[in-house]
Length: 258
Length: 263
Image (cartoon, rainbow over all chains, first blue to last red; front, side):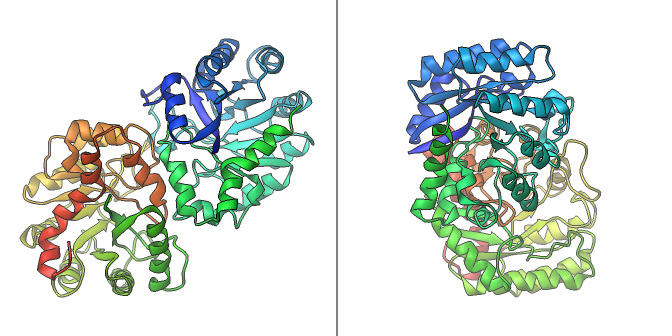
């Protein structure tokens, strides 16, 4: 069984994807033995009616997931009254977490609003997912060039929200092992494998960071789902380590919520 | 599925010697079902190896690694259009008189549309050897001396009998596939970019499965992410077989036969 902590609903703005309709996405995940998938929305990257985005994510997860899809709301703290979006994610949609895209929403991680958002999410016991990038910078649309999130200030920001539960999405390609270690050591921080690269990359990563902080993430449907699956196969990790990454660590993180 | 990987390096692979690095690769190949790979470039981090001795050293490292695992890897000669005379000597040393079976990944110092590539392409045609050419189409511009798919097309049009594989098909594959579409002796290599869904479907639709060749670009990349591009694609199984190995075996067959290697 797999808990996939990094899937997206709706349409990527620059390309149609196999699996960008919720029925197809759910079918693919089931076919690949995914029992639970934490789902954000591509709409949350560029849309400004974030309340509408989150209503649609919640509806799609209810309509197509049958327990498979777990909605994560998008929050843009540069929008007016963003705190109300956080409240609705928790109180109205009963979401266990939120997903952030700082580089698309125009704030850095030393911006005071980021700290405020982390503390508010923590007070509401929401898991925070932070997407470090959405696409290789070299292949972006020329009119839509967005650099990855600069994660240098992240460790300090994490320390300002002591009970925070944070997962880094799509960060492995641009964070050094040293930087990852510092951020993970700063608090209850996790990372996922979708952008881990190099031969036997996942197996080599567990020498750098604690196994208990590593989660399965496919970044489906932007990435072929099989990429994450085969990375586990290539890792050379034993069965219990693979199970920890694919399932146990994420379940433990989710269970710690009220 | 018989997976043959056209595009592998010893760089970023653990190990102190070529043999140790190759042993690590073989372990990983076994985990994901890769039968054989084509190895090139050794493991220097120097992207502009000069003087020529550095090319020789890297080619020697590749031959050492391949020799230790004869059933699992073939060597491919590393050279540069910036040094055409030296490159011809190295072709004769490594392929003509040596065990290697392919040319490339050519990457260093000169774009592949320069005149210095013509003797190399001529040698490849005369000896029925495939070329693997590095190229990208980077948002923001390529590095100086770095080829683009358009450069590959230019070279391929000057040498219509040449069989040449774009190592990355632009990276920006929606552009790269279009750039090579009309030039039938240019192949689409899949290696070394993120496993973005839709890549292989578009390549098969626009070029046909016979012009699409699997490669990984390990050690910097995983086998996993690159195989996933094909395994995850919504295309017929027969096309996957061609892409993951059939096409490469077909392209290499003349040279493998000359060498007496098992196809």
